[in-house]
Each structure stands twice: as C-alpha cells, then as structure tokens.
Image (cartoon, rainbow, N blue to C red):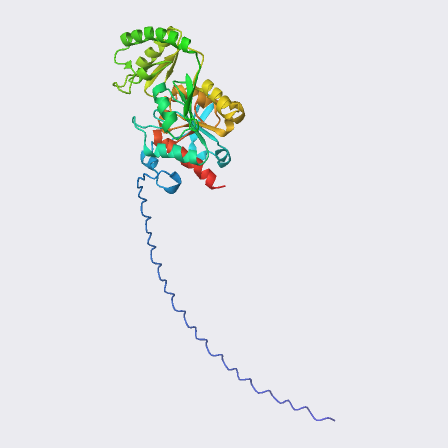
Length: 347
C-alpha cells in the first residue's frame, strides 16, 4: 500500500503594488500676441507740369490736372462711348493718321495748351500724319498749314483743304465749290446774316468772319455771353429755312450752301494727297472731336475719340465716338496721343 501524497502548500505570492505615476502637469503655453503691422501709406504722387515737347519724356502730363468726373459707358442709338483706356492695343498700333477738330478739342478755354501742340509734334515725329479738320476760317488754315506740325488742314467744315509744300515753298489749296459759286453763296449768306441778328438777340457774327471764304459763322458763346440751346436752334432754323446747311460747334453755328462737310473733303484729301481711298484705310485713322458738327466723322471712323467735354452734347449728336478721354480739350487730345505712343513703345 502506497503512502499518501504529501501536499506542499504554495507560498502566497507577494503582490508588490505599482508605484503611483506622477503626472506632471504641462506648463501653460504663453501666447505672445503679434505686433500690429504698421501700414506705411504711399506718398501721393506730385504731378509736375512739364513744358517738355516730347510726351514720351515725361510721365506726369498736364492733362491729369484736367480730369472731368468719372464716365460710365452710355448707349445712344447703336453706338456706345467707352473710356479710352479700354481701347485695345492692336488697333492703336495700326494707326497711321490722326484727324482732329481744333476748338475745344486741341484748345481749352480758347487757348492752345503746350501739351496739345507738343502732342501734335510728337505724333508727327513718330511718323503719323496729323490733320486738323475744323470749322475755322481760311485765313487761320493758311497759317496752320504753314506753321503747325501737320500734314494738311481741312477748313470751314469741309469747304477746302490746304497743304503746304515745303520743298517747293507753295500752298496747295483745293475747294469744294468754284470761285463763282462761292461768290454767289456769299450774297445769299448775307441775307441770312441780317435775319439771324434780328431774330436771335445776343448772338453776333463771329470775329473771324472776315477771314472766311465759303461760310457764315454765328457766335453764340465765344465772344458773347453764352446763349441757351433754344436760341442756338433758332439760329440753325434761319439757315435751314433758306436752304443752307448748318452745323453746331462748341462756339459757333456755321452755315453754308453746297453738298459737302468735313467728311467729304477728307475723302478728297486722302485720294489726292496720300493716293488712297479713305474707305480702305479708315481702320487706321483716328478722328478726335468734341461737338455735334463732328458727327459725320464720329460715325465713319471705327476708332473715333471724343474729348471729355463731348459729354454735354450726347443727346444732340447724331453719332457718338467709340472712345472718350478723361480730360477735356487739348489735354484730352494729349491723353489720346500718349496712349497711341505708348502702344508703339510696347511693340
């Protein structure tokens, strides 16, 4: 018989308790606030008028001092005037001829600013043909063709063009009507003159009438107190009732007999002087104007420009220019010229 098994009891296990973990709290982060940024305002640019002839030689041109109120595009009929800054570069670079009115387009307040004359000279030196197209008289146009940096001049709202041939030292003159027809027209215009002065108090025969060959100019705001537009309309009626044509400029009502205007004489000038049809090059021609008598030119040229003072006439102009400057008169013309020259420098 086997002896009984001896059961040896297990020793009790000693459980060593784990030491409690010491949780070290994180130090709170110190948020350092950013220093406020100091915004240093840009210094205002000082526009210093310059008498420099070359518009490319100075950036602060005078026209910036003559900005009118901001212009919003406005739809009149089928045409829209847009700010000249929207004029695309490609058609600007293609321009070869610049046509322009004189009164309140090249001038401002009856004076020709140095900026406008400099713009004409700079455009001519850059190879563009500058041609004033004006209602001013033959006597003035003879001087302009001789003395100004221009290729030719169209005067008396299309009655003629003058071009000075410097090599042969002679003035070339071309008229829409013959000498005999102009003499007969003068007698009929004299009757209109008498009627206008009686029926429209406050107006006067223009001071430059003595130097005119084909038309009659009635002053309504150049050397007389400005007349209301209903008085200007009565002057126009005196011409049209007698079978004459009449156009309103910024200072005069011009009336004449004959089927011509600024555009028809410009067509003839391009054919005889440049040997091209105006229709074939009109995409490369700019006309700059300011008043209702410029409507035929505004309508014909796709890139016609109005200086800012064209805006008061928008309800009275049959056709509006495609573009409008921010500056008035001669400073608006300088603005347009600077844009053309900038387009060439970008090529």
